[in-house]
Amino acid sequence: MQTSPDVQAPPRSARDVVLPMLFIGLLFFILGFATWLNGSLIPFLKIVCDLNNFQALWVTFAFYIAYTVMALPAAAVLGRIGYKNGMTAGLGIMAIGALLFIPAARSSYYGIFLLALFTLATGMTLMQTAINPYIVCIGSRESAAMRISIMGLFNKGAGIVVPLVFSALILSGVDQFSDSALAALDAAGREAARAELSARLVYPYAVMAAGLLVIMIIIHFSSLPEIALDDEPAKGGDELTRFGVFQFPQVVLGALALFAYVGVEVIAGDTIGLYGHNLGVANFAVLTSYTMGFMVLGYCLGVALIPKLMAQKTALLLSATSGIIFTFGVATSSATDTGISQLLLGWAGVPAVPNTVMFLALLGLANALVWPSIWPLALEGLGKYTAAGSALLIMGIAGGALLPMLYGRISDASGAQAGYWLLLPCYALILFYALVGHKLRRWK
Image (tube, rainbow, N blue to C red; front, side, top):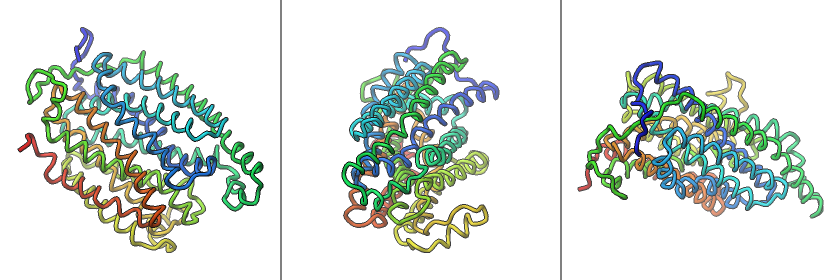
């Protein structure tokens, strides 16, 4: 990216770091709000559009596949317009995606819902490609995971709020749309009931579109500085080549690790409501908040411990190990006993859930520090290839499109609980990156 005369060097003073972090924190909250809405949207659209588990999880596919399709174009756009303008453009595209939910809700046509989700995620891809390297580069690399953890508090904090808001605004009286209630109606009655439920999405998404446009204007006229990456030499040479980023094993393997990570994160956050619904859990619509709550706890630990008490690679190692342990808990523990949730959350008055659901929520704790740890480790030494490396890492988000679909297929064939064995090889790949992959600087 050619820097313009007004481009500033990466800020280093506390004030120059904190102010951009406040703006970026707002953007991370928006990304979290749009992303973790899917966890409540999936069981909702399963009712509205009369879907099975596999069909309902096309929501995650349409949403996360945009990151793969649009990541490289997003990097090209950033190279032309810069990181700050990329953020404002991303917000505008997200607003268009939110507006597409209005005709989707009025028609109850699943294809339009999926198009709206893809458009929304396209804007988010541009935003993600800009703000992740931005937050890495505005301060020291050693504390990058700590800064990303702070951003995670905004992102996953939104994940706690969203299911509660969605449940309050959209799912009041949802019992009248249960499988048994709909089965008691004739075909015309079922269609009318589903259309009534679908129409509840119109107002919230109209408000979301308006809010995104307002924030787009705020960011555009803000004092958020541009970051200059051209001053940092790339170890692979000064000349940029089309596929030059692939000479860096740490970023290629990082993208694979992120593929596995986003897959398990989405499965833990977006299928928990569907899983709870299948098990007959009364509060299934807010179960995503359980996972997000544990993720927030993990991010708080990251802020407190990294880098003073724990290195980024150590955080990644602990995350992968705990993910493997919790996966065994999800796949083998009781679907009726609620002892673990009563032990961990009973003191707070949180409704009890079966042990297998609780282990699924605990994966939020295991997942929290994976993203913050991989980004600085993968981008180290890329220099002028940082934008391309960021795009490659963003493409790893495709794991959120493909792995939940695979889980949906396995759960329909073998049972919802058995489907969670899929998480085991994913955490094994993350463990490999923590132990070996991030250290590699050349292909042998």
